[in-house]
Structures are given as C-alpha cells and as structure tokens.
Length: 90
Image (cartoon, rainbow, N blue to C red; front, side, top):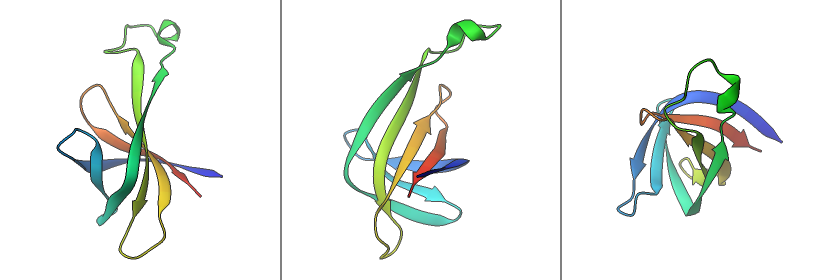
C-alpha cells in the first residue's frame, strides 16, 4: 500500500550522486541499502507548453528515522533541482 505525500524535502547526496539522507517534517531520514533510479516519461503532449524535460527522475529508497524499521519512499527531483517526497510505501 502507498501513501501520497508530495512534500518538499531537503536531500543530501553521496559522493556518487545518489541520495544519502533527506529531511522531512524536521526529522532526518538516513537512506540504507542501494537507492534505485527510476525514470518515467511525462505525457508532454497533453500540456499546452513544452516541459523543461520529458522524463521524471524518481529515486526509490529505503530509509530509517532514528532506530525505526526501514520504510520505502519515492523521492522525485524536479527539473529545477528541487526534491519532493512523493510516496511512502507501507
């Protein structure tokens, strides 16, 4: 089951460019395991104007807060470089 979050988050990247941590609702979440990059195609032909890019960059990550069990999340990086916590998988 998934929960749509759509909240702006601050993401710290590892040296290789993968997400390493993110801040959501004042709490730091540490990404464990290997993040997976996913790209989805935007239906650009449905919009009146051309998008900045046609692919949406998503990162599926497992992250922990404090000593909790890992939870799976989808992080989205927008064309302007901002990050959004899109989905929490439970």
